[in-house]
Length: 236
Image (tube, rainbow, N blue to C red; front, side, top):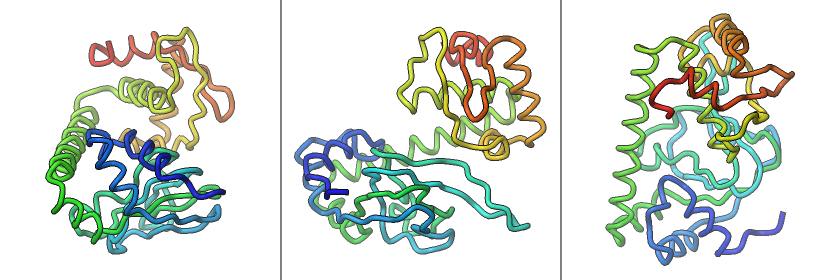
């Protein structure tokens, strides 16, 4: 893969939750402090409990975020692709990594060291405000997820998850039907929505009965309007 240009890096930074609110000049400054790195498919980028010394901006490829259960089973709960950042929380708070990150396919990334990030924050108060807003947004998101697990039936949580997955992939949630390549097993989906695999299977079956989805191998044929009806008023 050819090295990404500075303008390409700045363009990707502008799409991330952490850096999107910054002025283009500051995004360009951050891009200049980043260093190119590459990983073959299957290579571990960092392990849970490692020190958070770098954050990564994915340029090309895909990274799996996972944890290993006490019985040794790996559970994936997120895939990170081009234009997304990973490893940012440990860099922000100086703590250890909370999960493993593994390149699924050949992956090109730009890294920013914690030392460089700290220097940029000291020099640019706007970056400090952006980081604070990012952490607050993550806290609100976590609170909403916990509330959803506690208060809403599983089929509602799965419908909301699928709608969010459609949006993250840039698919049209106003179309009559959209094909969603889910990219994860039912066990991985269960981890994300706080349920067991059999219960997730039941929820998917219930969504299929009302015509919100149709399972097609590793893909789901989604009918967004029906998913919104199941998801409730928060998705109107």
